[in-house]
Image (cartoon, rainbow, N blue to C red):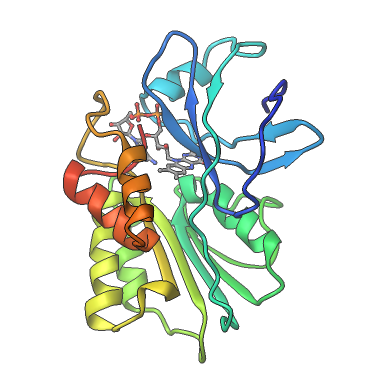
Length: 232
Ligand SMILES: Cc1cc2nc3c(=O)[nH]c(=O)nc-3n(C[C@H](O)[C@H](O)[C@H](O)COP(=O)(O)OP(=O)(O)OC[C@H]3O[C@@H](n4cnc5c(N)ncnc54)[C@H](O)[C@@H]3O)c2cc1C
């Protein structure tokens, strides 16, 4: 939980994220605003085997001063949507939970985690999935075999970048879904490893917005330039 954020203004978009800079670092990592209430900003951070923020969370970090960017969000429910389908790994869970709380539409969620169900984190219709192996994800297979609800709706998904690219292709080419009906984001890269960020997403995001591109097109531009996932 972070406090002392004078001037922080939530976008209200339920998958909004901030770039977090931890002490002694100049690189950032992206985290979802799980909640922003009474001057307290909650980020739920998944601890990996190694990593810049991962290492910081294992220090005596209470009271540290960190940097936070202005928030940005991507979730954009079409007016005609009558259902919401959410899929992701553990890093997507904070956004999945906040999106679920933000809508009165029926929500179906699938969360892949090797840690088993996280009781009480998420209300509603959630299916907890075990990955096929600790190093692999079954999310692409899950999505390709989904039975889609009838009528118009909105599909939101986040996880490992290479998988997300495959899923975007499936939605666009195999299912012919309009890009306004889904939002699929690469949250981290399984192949990139830990390295300096070589491409700043902000100019790409701003140029894409100025050109009237959808978030999906902007993420695709970013993936193409970088060859990996957004996230530090
Ligand atoms: C818009 C957005 C919102 C996000 N929201 C959240 C959030 O709310 N909570 C959250 O925990 N994460 C979130 N992420 C993902 C997070 O930014 C990345 O997982 C990030 O790489 C973690 O930083 P790190 O410093 O711990 O590890 P890094 O220094 O970035 O990476 C260290 C190593 O860990 C590996 N690694 C990174 N992420 C994972 C993973 N998920 N599973 C397995 N290995 C991994 C890397 O490949 C690398 O080898 C979000 C990402 C984006 C783009």
